[in-house]
Image (tube, rainbow, N blue to C red):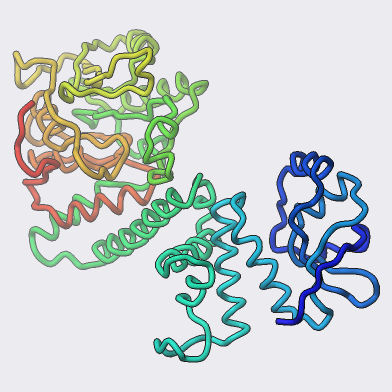
Length: 447
């Protein structure tokens, strides 16, 4: 590169030009620092040859100097013969080392540096250390980073242009996890599509195909219009809880379950009234409903049920001695989840005398849905209220585990969900499991 001179030049003679970094952020502290201590680190400029200069690096410093009314600034001055690629390289190399870059800005910057060096030196086609051209390893060495780190940053920069939700990540680590999740979804979606497209030729394949078809992607309120009056014997209703699940579950903060649809608290009463009315219409004259709910909505739900002359009682899913709380200073850890079991007409409990407490551990490991419940527990619950051959409605299918539990018992369950992602995971579970033997636990464990 050409010879660099150190100079003091008028602030007004420096032109910003087109900058890679458009958002320079708040410079108020820098302004105060310049007023008291002056400019310690020089800017980088190119001499235009006519008494003016083009800024190469130091946009924040120049802006702060202008705001501080500093008339002259120290610069590292590059000659007019500097090429366009060399100018861009100087700006990028200075900005990539700054600590105040956002993760995405830094990733894009590293990608730009790599592409720029490839443009200057050509792409390296050989793995020999002395081979001509430029590689990602060379970029890693230039920036003092590892080879995998640069590969990952380039992937993140590329992915952000395709997946806007990636920009919601707070840091690089979260963005990497989100990208992994998005890539998993793509693979899962492709696998599910291939399974659906495959012709069912054997009895077991036809069973699996029928199970897959019971999970419908769409809006419950539209879908339930096609269900005849009084045609359902059992409803397993697990609606959104209107408790801002996105803020409470860490995996949702990372965007792992960004397809989960929550309901605004101000609209929840109307929402649940409409859901319960739709379910009531399709329930037979002697039928049961299980209604999962958050405890703060209990009174409101009871009011809706009582206004429709529906009888109900309480039950809980006991998850074990270790509970959870987001506010340990004010609330004890909860180790159970409540539900109401509701009857229309005069149906009888099948397992009479059974306790209203269902003792089952939560699903361990990675769940496919944020509110996924164990197949074994749902199966126990269905057997408590339903005869063989019962037709079950699941308004919000979620993980699809209710359909699998019903299948194990020779029953049919169907329902809707808005997210194709959740159906894809369900189809893969249907295909990889054994009809009649679907399960969530690897082995039976008692609480």
